[in-house]
Length: 402
Image 1 (cartoon, rainbow, N blue to C red):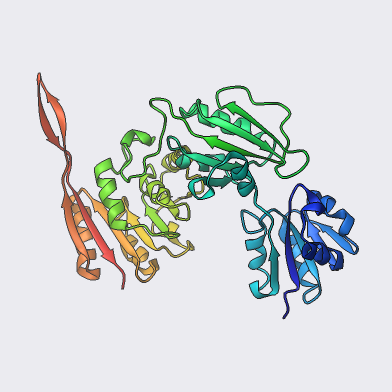
Image 2 (cartoon, one colour):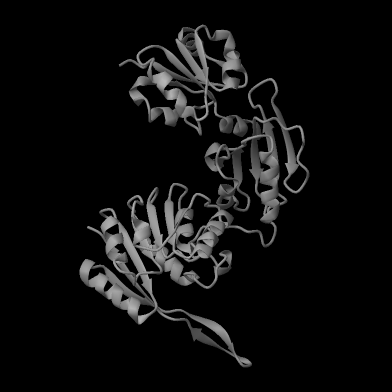
């Protein structure tokens, strides 16, 4: 099958910015699909049937596939494979049937205007994505390029920066890049945002942190007070060891059984943007607390399941790793989770009581692995003096599924 589906990137300069090949493909297409703005930009070239994306856009896929083998063009903003429609279409149409003609992405245009090196810049899109996802990117002196969802996005970004101690950050408000309506303005995050921003805009952020800013550290073992909790929290030192034992890898899924405050699943997701986690917590109030912690620490896509294991595990996608921080004594919890674990996956369970230690010893006897006892002592006041007070030791079982 020839490459019948052309994905053509078009910029704000419209037809004038297209190559001769791109113009020919559009002019000869039996069907041209795109957003209303894209169709207007290319309107002078469209000779046959235009189709504006419906909502949801998947509703247009049957019309595209019905023309399979004939000339079809999909218009996209800039680079179709940079937060664009390209990867979505590649899941519907075989890549060898697609011809892609990208234009410069909004990120490339922004870097060319600001003199920033794209490889040194963090990028994010707020189009259909939660604003809180920017929180882990807020590192001192970092540079971030963020695609806005609408004209109100920059003000919401500025408010988040001010609320988290990054008010002095400089915002580059970049509108309609690459076209005749292009405009760039620079304002501090802690000042008023312009009221006449175009809906099509991008925000360049030069991050500046005040003392005490809520910077999410890059290491495991966040401070305990980073999490809202009721005492059901894997403490900092134990959490760092636990994350090390879980050994997160890019794109993997974690089951966090007996999530408590969600600290393990949250730190798992912070290790890489592609990592996923499901927090299982039978206590409804704690489950709500897990969700709030996830938003506050920049992983709002953490999935929270309210229910008791093992019943709550039924129907969940198979995990690459499992952590059991609570509920290991439940009938069949370890066995059910182990059965669901993918080959090569890791399971880690912590215990502080003799009864739960017995469960972990049984797991060790059945599945192998290792058992480790971890002790931590913290300085405390003893009258007018000081001494180290031991915390309850934690027994940790680590197993790897063949």
